Image 1: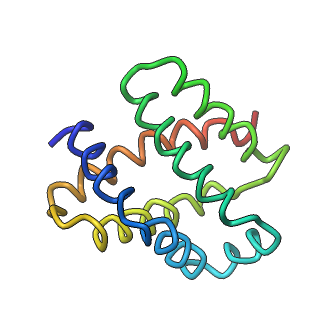
Image 2 (image 1 turned 30 degrees about the vertical axis):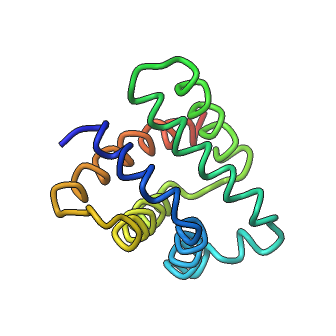
Length: 133
């Protein structure tokens, strides 16, 4: 298993018109403090930002500077000083995304699930590192 296989899985999910809707359905229901954070959010724009953010995460993990810059921007915007996103909530984000991938990727396997979680954790750890900066 590798990042390349996670990216292929993500590509399979992105062609499913319901993937991002399913993710937000899962994510907003995953913890009582999450849905209120999105109450005044333009969800069409948010889905586009999610797509970009996951792509940035993959580029960062591939060692591409543009991806690292993108992930660092997310880290800064989600930091305590700005949006104040509790670092503990990222586990719900990871689990909701993996749950959505599982539902939308016909080639999903337990090994791929492990790789997805490892990949997302690496990106999230970078984002969380900005929380107290």
